[in-house]
Image (tube, rainbow, N blue to C red; front, side, top):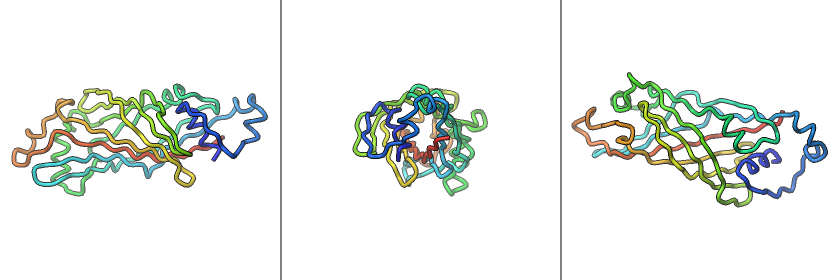
Length: 207
């Protein structure tokens, strides 16, 4: 439980916990020589959902989202943000379960010319907390088809057993990235706005 203190510090929240870590309380100098390992776990998910004139669609990223990075135990939120290089995602690994829809999706996203999209964390701030749950806003950059757009998205952070989960949802427009689904499928109208959802599972370990 004490590991959550570092996340609350990152968000700028003063959390009052009933547990104390004697190692951290008794020796700040020793704490400075240690690190925190933050892991994004492989069960994390990125999904894209939208609507057509006939049905809805949902694509789930099937690539490996797991990664890890280290920060010192007295890190601040700026240092944490700088440690995260962002999520680079392969377009071909978004799957719907329908081969034809997968093929059209790759065409819409201009996969041959731009095989990757990217989500970068730029800043993070908390707006409220309740117990060990936190809500806030994150500034992110999304790059699709070579075009980068900035978004300020709401997120929720909560504890689940020994992990943290971060959930965020952001609507995006294909037109904002120079994409035109109508050029790919002229029989079925694909709505311009879709929804990107992030469900990140995070594990924190003191080294």
